[in-house]
Image 1 (cartoon, rainbow, N blue to C red):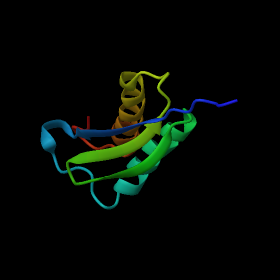
Image 2: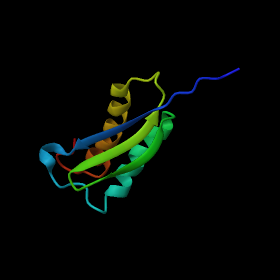
Image 3: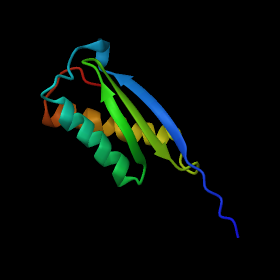
Image 4: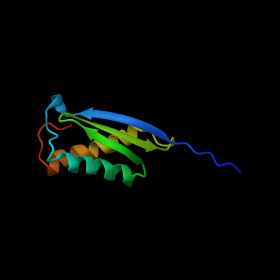
Length: 93
């Protein structure tokens, strides 16, 4: 008997408020780690996480039963929470 298998991939990009250069080399590993942890927590598949001083790129796999808006909300909120609360970066969104 055949078992159907589906997985979607998404490339999400978001930036800091007003494209401020806040994601420096010193904080980048912690922010990317928080995103990777949130994806893994929800059983999504992190493929690649990167970016520049003012934005983040995130490529991940997810099942078709989950809304993309829910996933992006979860990963953006985890990185934003880390940046504003723990790292005290101003204007991070």
